[in-house]
Amino acid sequence: MAEVVKSVEPGSEEDILTRIENKSEKIESLIKQFKPVEALKIALEDSPPQDERCKSANWTVVHKALMAIKDIEGMLISLDPKYYDILMKYVYRGLSTGDPATCDRCLKIHEKLTEKAGFGCILRSLADTLNTV
Amino acid sequence: MANPLKLYLTCVRNTLEAAMCLQNFPCQEVERHNKPEVELKTSPELLLNPVLICRNEAEKCLIETSINSLRISLKVKQADELENILAKKFLRFLSMRAEAFQVLRRKPVQGYDISFLITNYHCEEMQKQKLIDFIVQFMEDIDKEISELKMSVSTRGRLVATEFLKQFL
Image 1: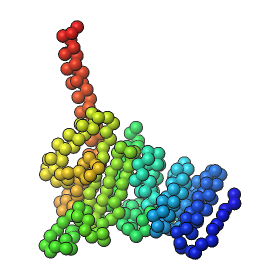
Image 2: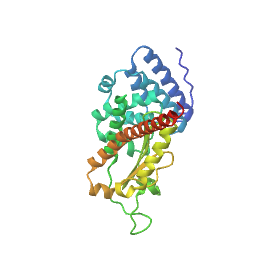
Image 3: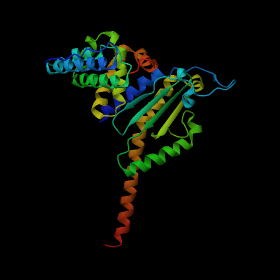
Image 4: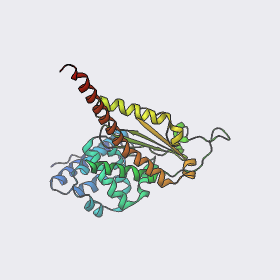
């Protein structure tokens, strides 16, 4: 799969959007190879972008990875603790969509993630008004 | 299915457990006033991110927190017109008697069926765990209540119709 990386000034919106597109292609290929956990790790890597469009694009990518995961326990065990907070923010974004399949998956992840990360994780996702997802 | 309901209630319970961190905070604009900041929304630094937990398109729960107050708005499942009317009447009945409930809001937030407002004073007088238990129990029981009401309405309707149509036999 040829990945076309456009060269624009760093930090600009187009740059972030193209990075997200590249991530999306990588993630789709990983999902086809039945490696959804790696896909999720790549999706969560960059900190949440500031711009609205980039946030939506990033959310679509994370959503794809989340829906592909079957074994939630295993996923949380292999995920680095530093990603728990950002995963919780994406879980809440998923819960606000209202789509039954997404909400079902996000509710399961929320329960297991709270058991692992504790209430502090929830509170950090509520209190962080600067880096919203 | 009972399982998704349980997951939904667990999620709401965990979020409330984390979000119910209220302390007394006098009003910054007017001296000697103490207002629930979540209702007024005048200062953004006193508000946390609102969280919307949906079970499906019909049922959702909005939790908004601030430094001294927490507002929970619920939208209950309404499958058909009859449930719509029953839910509206029943929840209006409860909201009118909000004084007795203390944590209930007289008018639900726009777009929802019923709202609770919990302030730091409630947390001082009552136990946090019991407040959360009350809200989650309420969410569980409201569905049962409305199904019971619907069933009794259908039963009464059937009895009345049978009696009425007997005269034509």
